[in-house]
Length: 279
Image 1 (spheres, rainbow, N blue to C red):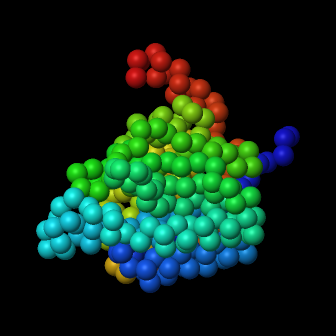
Image 2: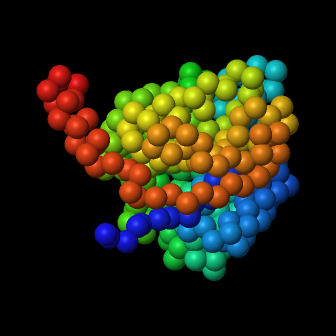
């Protein structure tokens, strides 16, 4: 029998910070991420996956050009872009030092237009190898804050191909079907919310996407003191393999992802059936 291909994956939930104008918050966010990178490397992880807005999940009210009492177009000149870039540079350098891959969502600045809400993929050589820009965007994000992305993105690590999903992408099964067609063995879903009670269904949808596409799902969410929604890894049968603390505290969970659990027979069946029914 051929040797089993496995990959040790760490998924993290980090503290919610929402003020990109606050230098202290940005530096604290970067420091927390680097601390978890050290933990992941010590646990033998090859890849560590962080949640949406891991350094900072910008608040629509903090950035509103109308002031915090009224939501309006975001004034991104308020953001401390140089501090954010410094933290990202330190994360990239640490990935090289530790020899691990890092998937780190962050705001991506664009010239003369609103930024993307993005996910960066940093290799174990400390190189930026891919960037995914959230495509779906909530009404608030689209109206006041961000420029939407347009393309799926995949990358490969140690014989595994992963797709990327961010924010409300998780609510759109067709994006996961697209990654199935692109041969993804798993999808790394990064999602942030400070209203856990209204978003518990998101984890259910992530599990459904795993089952429907016979793929692994890494589900990274923000830490929340209310608990109820935790980062974790879902296997191709839709079962949680591991989860971080459900009490909402920052934490890390590590899982061994197996290539043999991704059934190519199922993928081919879905491809043929979709062609036959014209979907």
